[in-house]
Image 1: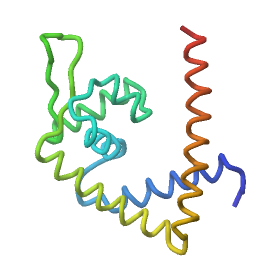
Image 2: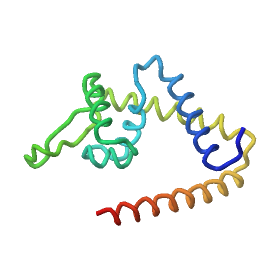
Image 3: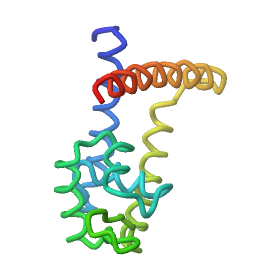
Length: 148
């Protein structure tokens, strides 16, 4: 196993995703859908643009995922203020049920991942991990601003 930061971030993300998808097989949810439902939990009624940004998903790929989610009855698209170019996405009752299941599964995965890690170690890790996130986010934001 490589001990570089980028490798460990990538490997941990893939392990979490595999564990989640394995547990979600029986629900019919596919890749990308849990992330969107998790985002909508706190941002119900968001625009597709905001969801794409918040979930780090390309707009074209998001449209495909949302179409499938709408077919399954997990979300609805609604125009707000008569703006036909901007749909907002809302979770349905079925979507909320699936999202609650996702929360339970994430909690189980995190509990497993955090075995033998003290509260102090976790707090320190989260402090450093948040700093890494903000550093990377600031770099991305700077590059996007320079390209405008």
